[in-house]
Amino acid sequence: EVQFAESGGGLVQAGGSLSVSCIVSGIGFDTYAIGWFRQAPGKEREGVSCISTDGTTYTFDSVKGRFTISTDNAKNTVYLLMNTLKPEDTAVYYCAAAPLRSCPVIVWDHWGQGTQVQVSS
Image: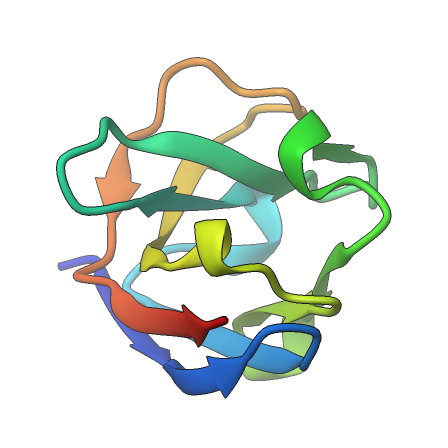
């Protein structure tokens, strides 16, 4: 069974930084594209960033230049480093996985439960 363990969320002041992580188990981590998404209260889910097994990345315009996605394959973990946080970044952040795909990915097979990030003004 595919499992996700997301952590690192919390409360941070605008302009600050935060790193969230997602440990993935139950799949061949090195054969999956991994992505980060977020959903703000009352809003639809939106993409944040994605990384392919070959290192190719795709970052959405809303966070370009501020957020960086990376992986540690030995630890089956994907990270999202968030810099220069803004109040509009407040959301639940989710990781997702897609087998044998290259970013950008349209169809995602597995989803985590999410970790809350709140940015105060």
